[in-house]
Amino acid sequence: TFKVTLAKSGQSYIIPSGVSITDALREYGVHIETSCEQGVCGTCYTKVLSGKLDHKDAYLSEEEKQSGDCMMPCVSRSASDDLVLDI
Ligand code: FES
Image (cartoon, rainbow, N blue to C red; front, top):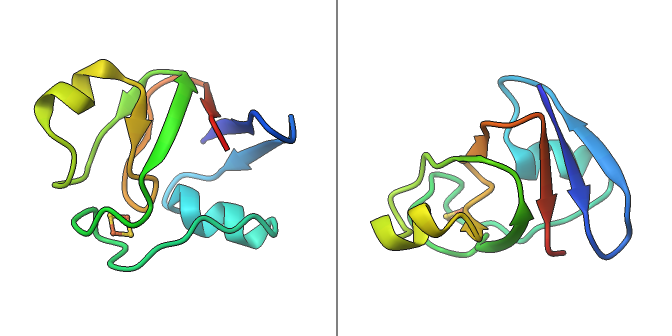
C-alpha cells in the first residue's frame, strides 16, 4: 500500500497492494489511458515528480528506469510511501 498524489489536482489516493496504479485510480475516477496493461506497449507512460519507483515493465530503458522521472503505472509500483505523478 502506498499513496499516489496527482500534481495537477493535488489529490492523493491510496493504492492497495495487489491492485495496479491504473486500476486503483480508475476506481477513484481518474483515468490513465492503458492498452496492454502488461508493461510492454508504452500507452500508459507517465511522468513522475517524486518517489522511489519499483519498475516492473519491459518498456522503459534501463536509463529511463534509473532516472526515476517516468514510469508505466499499469504494472510498476512505488517503493516509497508516497509517489507524485505529473498528471
Ligand atoms: Fe501498456 Fe502500460 S498499458 S505499458
